[in-house]
Length: 306
Ligand SMILES: NC(=O)c1ccc[n+]([C@@H]2O[C@H](COP(=O)([O-])OP(=O)(O)OC[C@H]3O[C@@H](n4cnc5c(N)ncnc54)[C@H](OP(=O)(O)O)[C@@H]3O)[C@@H](O)[C@H]2O)c1
Image (cartoon, rainbow, N blue to C red; front, side, top):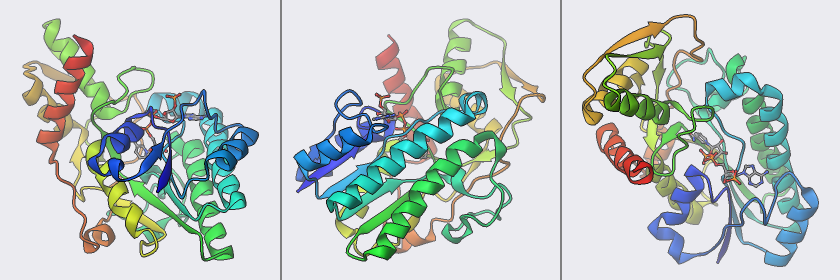
């Protein structure tokens, strides 16, 4: 059975490709050069030529808080194009199975935690990533509408919490929290810096999962796609404060300095913890706790930066 995986060069896509279950399928993973998802004609020709039975849609313009604040229009437009082009062309050509990737950013900023799937579109979005979130919500709704219009279409959206791990992006302009903490603390340790600055007061809470575990959830969902809820959270069901992450990563990396807090910097939503009851009830749980995930990620970082 053939599976088209978009975003195969990204952190999530790489982990999906590397997972042991990928070898049970013929996974097509075109690069952006081979298939630019902002180009509808290219998508149409690619799908006609390859007729995949499944699509795992893991491509998108992704970035941390700095990048989202600096370019909200780009995050909205590119993700809207990528998601809507791919999903609508897949429906047109008759692809029956799509796993679309959402994000916890799509939930309302004041939604009660843990965030349940039904809270989507029940309130205002967090302004620091609103453009990105609107585009991701549009792709999720498009999957839903197309499924309602033709119930032979199994189009579902997995809603991951924040992810980190092997193949993470360590570019300071685009990195997410865990990757940026690893770089900051690694460099501070090498330079023998006495202290490291944290954005905000460190009290904001985030849920992070090792990307290999998320890849495992994708391969868990794929053969069960007909029975899966059309939207389902994927996370660890526990979160930590930003300061907790700094302390935990300092212990693992061996940084012995102190921390200062820049209270003028933006910090985003106060908490974004997912309710993971639905996926747990189906029998899926992640395998890596924070310590194991960070140790493996740091080992990979050292391998790539020696
Ligand atoms: N990382 C997280 O914490 C997180 C959390 C929740 C949800 N997600 C979702 O997971 C998905 C992947 O995220 P990621 O962290 O793996 O991001 P990433 O590392 O930045 O990878 C993004 C992927 O999308 C591809 N891409 C971007 N624009 C494209 C285009 N126009 N045509 C074709 N491919 C394009 C990139 O190709 P190039 O290599 O050519 O740029 C890359 O392969 C996204 O949908 C994101 O919303 C991620």
